[in-house]
Length: 175
Image (tube, rainbow, N blue to C red; front, side, top):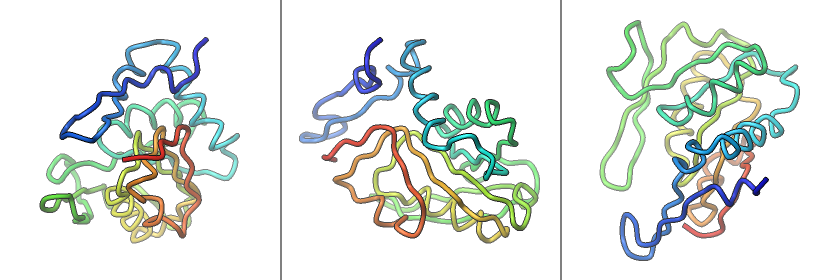
């Protein structure tokens, strides 16, 4: 079997010259690649005994977080784009390269004292996950770990999350 990195398609000069886009769809489209990805995330979390809830951010955090929640027999909480959740929500705005975005989660999704693992496919600047963590903490949850499938270390997103236990399965040094 190939290494997980070999399943990630690298597309040069996308979305602009000088950028290498790391495409996760090539991992998802291969059964072995998907298996390696989920197993790699599971290894970063361990047996899950110190975890109460898995949180995933829209949309690829759902893809990778849901099987982890299933494997650990833990509830799964979705963090979604503004206006997509039907019940009472809390929200956070965060900066994008050009403008801002807002994410939300249900007010009743995290109980005070719950230990939370946050999962997403990629950490770049860290803004989305930082906003998600702030909402989890606002609801009284404790983020015990943040796990990414891939990390673009050159964008220094890990620095925004320096107060948390952050792990990535694959780390690319550039942007």
